[in-house]
Every structure is written in structure tokens, then in C-alpha cells.
Length: 84
Image 1: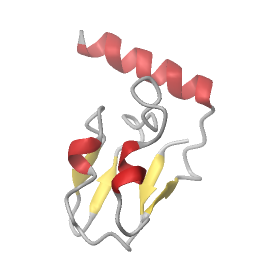
Image 2: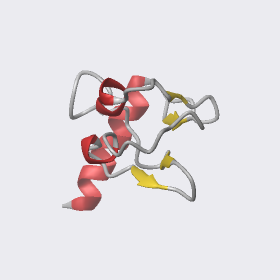
Image 3: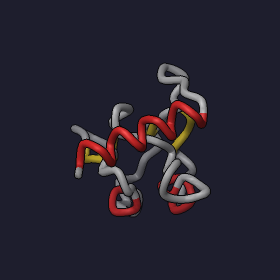
């Protein structure tokens, strides 16, 4: 499942550089996560790095983009293939 940044985001800038896939960018008011790039850090880390560093716990699973760990792994492999 992709992750989602809620409107509780305080724009502290700590999540964006932690994302190994470049899925986090600044939106109009708060940071946002591109579900096409978010793998919950599968393929990179054991835990979602943005969730680990968020001081206000505003990063949650995005129910609109459900994916299994296997699907996230396939997405990670496709992203790596495209970047090569």
C-alpha cells in the first residue's frame, strides 16, 4: 500500500530526503507522496523511512492504493529497471 501524508503535516522537510524513490515532493500546501513511486521502502529498507522520521506521525497507509508486499517488491524492481 502506498503511503499518504495527511494535512497534519508541518512541512518540517525531514521526509523528502529520506525517500529512496523520490516519491515525496512539496505540494501546494504540504508534502505529498506519489503512489506510483512509493514502495514503502520495500527493496531499500526494512521500514518506511519517512514514517520513521516524521515528528508528527502524519504519514499513513493510503487506502486508495492498496498493494501487497509482493506488489511493492515488483514496483520497486520496475522502478530500478527504468532508472538503469
